[in-house]
Length: 477
Ligand SMILES: Nc1nc2c(ncn2[C@@H]2O[C@H](COP(=O)(O)OP(=O)(O)OP(=O)(O)O)[C@@H](O)[C@H]2O)c(=O)[nH]1
View 1: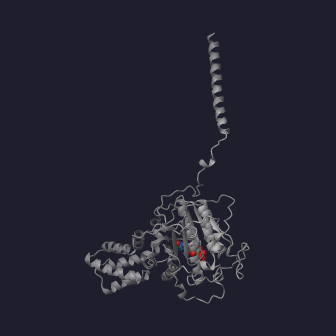
View 2 (view 1 turned 180 degrees about the vertical axis):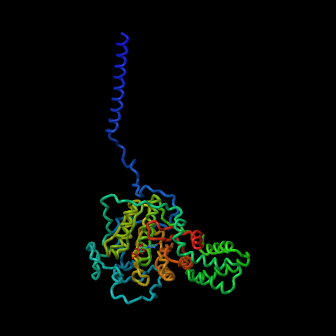
View 3 (view 1 turned 45 degrees about the vertical axis):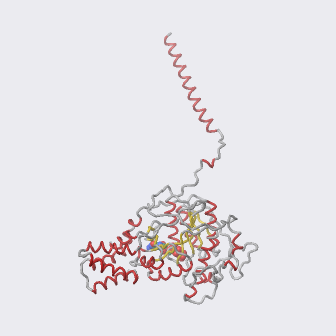
């Protein structure tokens, strides 16, 4: 009897357990099938993480530009307003035209520059890589310039979305880049530092030795003004401080060189978004200095920092240049806006910024065509790119890319670019391949703007923020 009761209880318990399991499973399934009336946008993340999962506490210093937005901010569709703005009275030359003298540009003066050879063809086609392939017909109502097959107003087409998800690179940590890349810099540079220390370390210097110090600084491209000041300060301070040993000389030289590099400059990259619009950065410079590479490297740093970035391929002279930028964009996880070959660079830049505003991205980096700084029309066109962008949003940073290996020539370029657009920062590339890093001193001095970034190799992560102390340390080996 007892056994029967026990068995009965066991059966009852088993049935109850089964019931509980059925109830739990049923309720879970019912909840899954329930239709949610909440907008799914609420839970959708605002953006896909395209940084390959990498988040760096950045060694780069980013800030927000302070320029006021254009007034009023125009909200109409991206393109239709361009033809209306590009009247003669608005100093908007067409592609291929010789630009008229901008009425709003007091900083001219580049017309005084001697042109290398008379330009037989219109300026745009005089560019070395300007095959100006026929593009789409001009928009209705927009008269196409008869001599230029490319429609000046050809709309910039957003790049086709890649079919498969691109493979994103791993991005090197951005923290402490200049220190990690110091070896690169010092390979070519620290010969200068060593010879200076060799001369100064012995204490009392005769006139010949001081002349050698001066020559060493001049050969390293520091320029006569900086060299004069450095030598004068060293002479005075070595006597005042009674410098006798190499370590004392080193400390003094370090102090003087850092002082010459104006450590107080704001070297932040103005890439942080504004409340209602992205930051806009314009990358300018002569052909082959490393503009596209720098734009790509900078985009990597920004994406690694969790930013959404659009690259504007305003180099429309060479299809390969836009392809190169698009490759960077795909690898890094940025979007790209490009035009047809021969399209108006200003229109592409304008479209990139419009798209950046519409998509709510953080930063738009506009890569421009390399141009001969001696060609008046091309330089005018660069000024126009900036003015047209500014109809949409202020340009926060204009980064002039200079090739350090060309030394003094870079300075000549910098002067002319500074007359056309207000340079706000310099990127000195190829510092890994030259002992002429002294150009940093001259560029800052001459332009009154800081070197913000340095390129230290062709690799995707070989871009570093410029830091005077770290640079001088590398110089001194
Ligand atoms: N060693 C070294 N090479 C670099 C550096 N930056 C760029 N380069 C190389 O310089 C060459 C030119 O770079 P680009 O980025 O194509 O130059 P660009 O100014 O865009 O040239 P254009 O499109 O002709 O105007 C490429 O081979 C780059 O890899 C650097 O910091 N160090």
